[in-house]
Image (cartoon, rainbow, N blue to C red; front, side):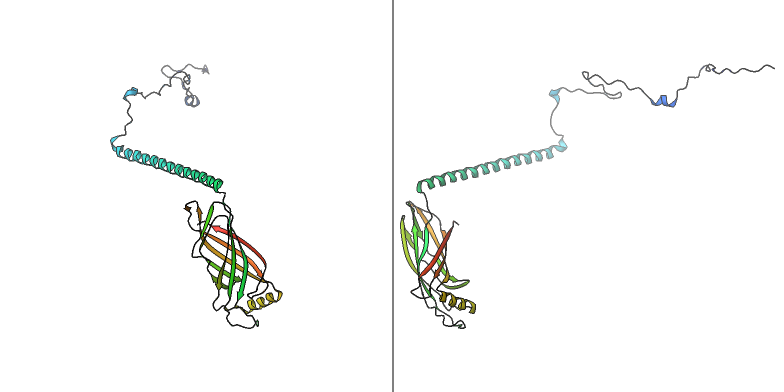
Length: 273
């Protein structure tokens, strides 16, 4: 019996298409990108509508018209506030510059100099320290002579009321009073005496003992504090009240009417407001 022969490569049956592997099905060639000079081609299934520029209107839809109106008003308000703030800052800057120029001109014209103050003499009464154990109240009285020097050529000084003067030993206030009110012209040296009194001053034992020891050494340290409100007169113009503060460290040889000043040092400052 004859053997059958099965050919390896048999032709496909008519009507059947050749099959393709799954890997070949997954790889789909992409169209090449358009050149940069050409317009991009829309993908298939879409269309492009072209509208002339003169028919494009920037008007919000009716449902957003009110919101758009509020937004534009708010924007205009912010712009106005920014403009007002800039104008305000500019005016302040101009005023500061003008004030600086005026101050410079006044300084060049009047050449102001600070007045000088010192203590010329102190006479003491009413302090009798017989024993460090004594606790009796004392009634001290100080006659303080003050020298005020105004070296300015075109500036006068008005010394107003409501002034104060005090004398301390350490932290204990011995007496207080006020300074006289007067006018000091330019290039003037005025010497005045003011009386300061203490009523029922009770010193602590340690302070009384220290005073006795200081008097024995003939070096009694005192502190004189003066506060005087003044007004500066420049021509016909007066300034506001300016407070002059004078602090003097004075050392006397004894606590009597014949007391002499051994040493003194005064410093002062001015409060413009």
